[in-house]
Length: 102
Image (tube, rainbow, N blue to C red; front, side, top):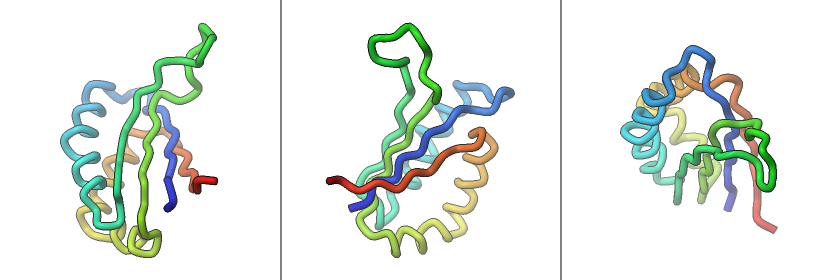
């Protein structure tokens, strides 16, 4: 199984409450409902462990993908293209990292 880790900050002009509402009502149910996705979670960073420093990223997405080929097809749907475009309006240069458990 592949886990896609997405690290991102919001654009400076983005209302955090508006993003979080959109994530809860649109992004999580839509992307999490894809046949190729077993789990989709959005996490809000709280800081760095044992440090007073803030996290370099405000949010982290964890997307557990059961079939990467199907995921590629799923994200091409009109609905997911719309959700992806909305995400890009909120997120400032997100990093998409493909991972696999050891």
